[in-house]
Length: 116
Length: 113
Image (cartoon, rainbow over all chains, first blue to last red; front, side, top):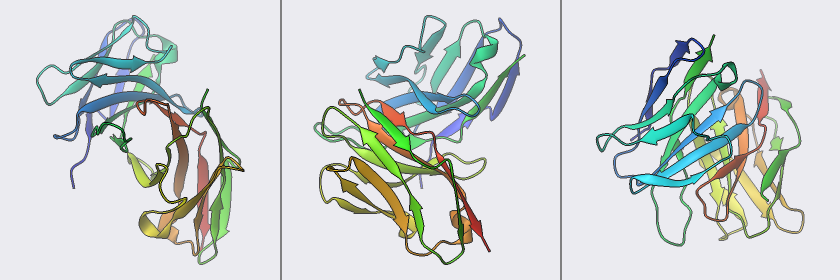
């Protein structure tokens, strides 16, 4: 069964450093998403991406964050200058899109980001 | 605004007994609702979804949920718990565009042998 994959599974970085989290969505999916889950808190929406541009983003997704689909298979989340509060589990998801219907999102296993 | 409240942070049941995980939602439009399950070190897996068709929705692994608009609820049930059901369960409501998912805080299910 096709699945969303994410690399690395765990990333440790120092405050102020840039990190790139990588995701490979399911191949025929058109919508891509990033979510994060700070330890002990809810899973929170960050951004959705369709047709090579951001479709929606939350208040969390400020100028420090960016997303890209560099090569038609990978979908990346970049954090320019990490802060301690960016430490969280980051989930990538993808979905098919059919006009007038909402399709489920398929989630990857997550990347645990630890900022020290 | 959309939101989801999962009424129990932790539920413990004996193997073979029924499971009830409660979820109430708040939405200004007709929502789509989902239940996802997360096993340790695994991604979020879809259990079932409601998208304005039948109000009783059947999912994988014997789970089902009933959409009750009058009670703004979408509780997840299973007649007989199995050890493999032990996991974290998330109730999710979509934004009106369907692009954003709003998660509940999760319910941790423990199954006692």
